[in-house]
Length: 382
Image 1 (cartoon, one colour):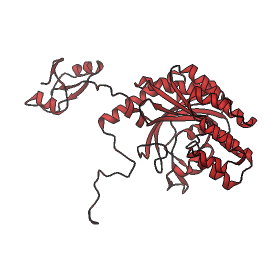
Image 2 (tube, rainbow, N blue to C red):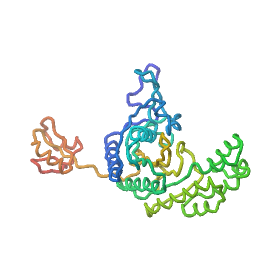
Image 3 (cartoon, rainbow, N blue to C red):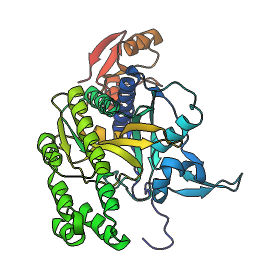
Image 4 (cartoon, one colour):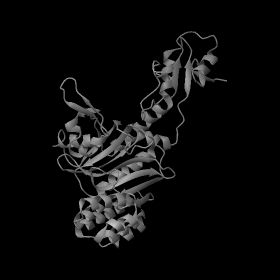
């Protein structure tokens, strides 16, 4: 393309896509199905704005997301604003301000779009991602952790995804152990990088007095029963032991609420858990490597305990089985509107002719209709 040629109007920035009819309808219908499950468990929907003032959106729990946020100046107030990279911190703000006096436990749900710099943890090189999730604010218990995950499992089953894997971690466990070891800042950084890479040799090199314990924690990962048995045998200081015991307790509660699901545990995984303070989970469909959602325990803006889980409809409906679209029926020009209304009430999609057609079946075929209505009788398009 030469410098005087305009780019194609179909060209979008990297990480942004147009969803066309079939995919857009699938995502809209599926998101509504997820929300209906959330609502059936008492989670009330809220809708925070896409844009907020930077110091509000990126304060509290949102501070950890500052590097992922697009910023722009409000031409009215001349204050900096930011596009939300994640809806959860906005729910934390709402809980701490507008719903501060609402009875606890506070159960909230949401659905909307978020925009990231880079692709963060979204996968598929996406920078605009859909989110649909729930937040349970007030209680700090293993049962609360399990409720959030059980409802997510039910919501995914509603859209046809029932074989799930919940990958659990406790992102503060390893940092707690390292902090108590009194290592230098440089050694701590090197050790955290080694743990992130699951590099046992580098952990042995930089771990000093806690190297053996950290290596045992690295090996305490995998299927829940085996991982937790290995974790139980690791000698941890009291503060760190509290984290491991909560991980065990929450795992047991999750398996009781969602029997038969696959649960794995990695006690030293912390990548991507920037504002979380307790048990965290990533959700996968068995047979797929794409993350369908994630969540965990955190603190609201007034340090109130909370936990939640955010599903990514973009990813969910790439994995979920496609449902057959409703039948499309061509209504010839001048057809009785009552007939069309009856057909729509029965679940059909009607496409009305706006001018007389010489070949009505050909017109129906051109408009992707499977039937032509003849005074309310459906005639298949050959």
